Image 1 (cartoon, protein in one colour):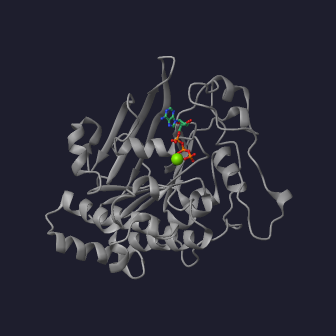
Image 2 (cartoon, rainbow, N blue to C red):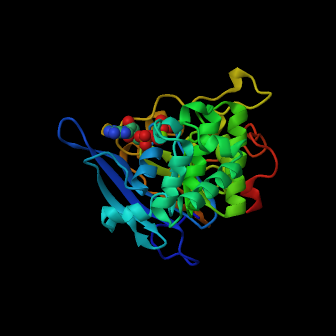
Length: 358
Ligand SMILES: Nc1ncnc2c1ncn2[C@@H]1O[C@H](COP(=O)(O)OP(=O)(O)OP(=O)(O)O)[C@@H](O)[C@H]1O
Ligand SMILES: [Mg+2]
């Protein structure tokens, strides 16, 4: 669900409600650099939300801030409400009962999260036993069951193996098993498939989609790939230079994006049957934190720039008549930007889209 951040929306409390989350990190010269600027979105129970943007836009920082895993010295403002309780105002020790149990995270590279000196089974059972009262034997049974659920063949043998004995795709499945063993309400998947090849990627996405549907695990899916988000997510949040620039349902984004950056991101995806010279590239790069341009941060790269874009920053406002579609662009009401609904980005897992079945 896309909220206005006011907390005044009707309906049930979202599972995760991120409100005006700002993150500042210390720079070497002693000053602070702002990495996130009032990031606002929410995730309903059992739903899927995609967080998309180019490298350096602040996706991982958002994920880490939710779990309070930011680098030392980080200063955070705003709220991260889990079921209405602000995680940022709890003592840090309270996060022990949140991480792994209520919110789990899967990173891009499983070797950074799996410990090479312990077996897969030991690591999975430790996660389980840290949060729930399980005997060693019951934890083993539950662990093997979980390895089976994530599609690891010969799970009782793999349970006793070390991470280096598994292939990359298998390790990523083991990571997902570890993340899901305590049945968290929310899984944060931070680019979980970019380090594996395309067939494994399709299998892992299908697995996550299946887990979302059968276990009703909500997923915050971080990716720079709009094709993956289109397959996986009901709603989407587009980030640029530490800010949310657009948030809406994935269908709305594909059909009628309201921010030139969102439209550009979608048109930069190669499509089967298109030629290289038809590909669109957004000129320039994401600006570094601490050296953002005045006005709209995207204006130096935008083909629709006008003086007001250079002079004034823009807030994230609802599109007229669409409360759940919000955009941060001075010109959005004047622009008719192309979507890609008829020219859908390459399908990775086939079948019905999660977004259209919800
Ligand atoms: N430890 C750190 N200290 C200072 N700046 C950092 C640190 N980690 C990340 N940054 C900066 O914060 C900004 C956001 O980084 P983040 O990792 O969230 O990007 P991202 O959207 O996840 O990108 P990617 O797609 O490459 O993973 C970047 O400009 C990055 O250089
Ligand atoms: Mg990242």
